[in-house]
Length: 71
Image 1 (cartoon, rainbow, N blue to C red):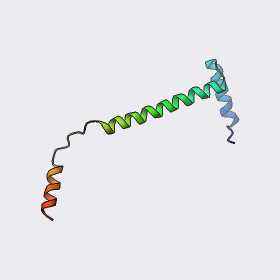
Image 2 (cartoon, helix red, strand yellow):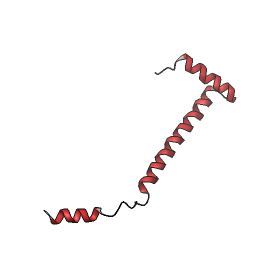
Image 3 (tube, helix red, strand yellow):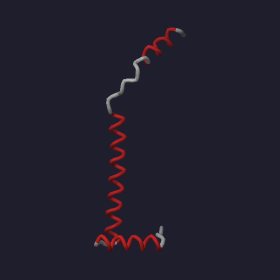
Image 4 (tube, rainbow, N blue to C red):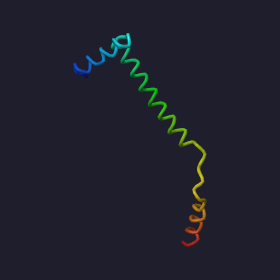
């Protein structure tokens, strides 16, 4: 079992009181927010990977063809 340091628990309790919730409610909200952030980051990376390919000068195919003919 993992235990949290007393100082961290005190800070969490203080923040929970400020928000008018419980420690469990605060931890639930923080966990949900973190998981949503990670999901959003992954979605951004996935969108970037699936985006239309860019134009990078167009010489790659020619270089490959030249390499094949010189073998």
